[in-house]
Every structure is written in C-alpha cells, then in structure tokens.
Length: 170
Ligand SMILES: [Cu+2]
Image (cartoon, rainbow, N blue to C red; front, side, top):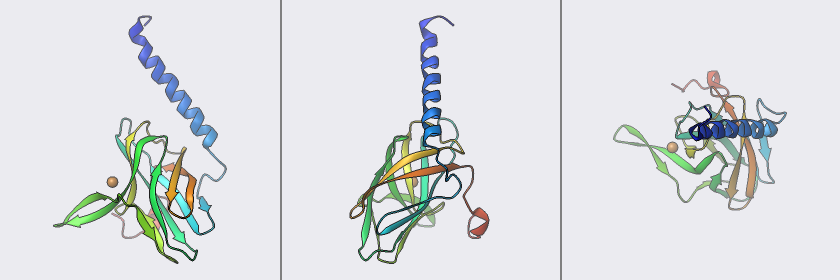
C-alpha cells in the first residue's frame, strides 16, 4: 500500500475527484431541458447518453434551428472530455447501417434544421477521457462558419429526453 506502485491509482482517484468538482461547477440551474441561442441559431437541448466505465466513445445529440436569413454550417466541434468530436452521418449501405465522418461539416439551411439524434446523425466523441455520468454536464464548443464559436453545456442522461414521444425509436 505504501509502495510506489500504489501511486498511480491514488492519482487516478484524485483525477476523478477533480473531474467531479469540475462537473459540479459546470452544473447549471437548467439541468432538465436547456437551449442556447445565437443571433441566427437556436440550439435545442444538447444531451449525451451516459457511458459505461472505460467506454472509448460517446455521442452527443441536439437539434439546431436556423431562424436567420443566411445558410450556416456546423464545421466542427471540440470538448475537453474527448480527444476529438466528429460529425457522423448514419448511412445505409446494402441494408447495413454504418457511420460516415462528415469532414466538411454540414449546412443548416435558412428556416431549416440539423437534427442529431439516436439512430441518426450524431456528434461522436472519440477517445473519451472520462466516463459520461448521468446527471452531470460537460462543455462542448461548436464551430460554425457564420455564427462562430458557440459554447454549449451537454446534459448527460441515462435515456433519451423524450423517448416516449418518438414512436419510431427501437
Ligand atoms: Cu459515430
């Protein structure tokens, strides 16, 4: 217990406490449903499904409405909880569902919307640095061509926010 070998787990323990503290500090009053607004864009309830320990990836979902007069483009995103965040399209090839990295990002048409949702397009968190724990939030920066950088808070949930309202879900 007092050997140097015990040091690494202790360090891991402190890191977990540190992450918990950061998560607690980031936990804001609008924990249930929340939204973010820019001049043109309305970003509705960013959320992520809780992950098991040591999961390598996670996914973030939200809906962006463009109520402005210009097409905008979600170019990329980043978060401190993962090595990278990639926009993935879910595509069907020969009856099989697969994921495709949208490296150029994706447009949000005037009066249009971008839906990232389970079984559909999503923001994939690659190289998760910590488990995503239900009830916590983490920061995510979205890079838009026109709106610039928008910082949002992602709510981690055990289940989809309104699963019962989506009859098409499996
Ligand atoms: Cu993916």
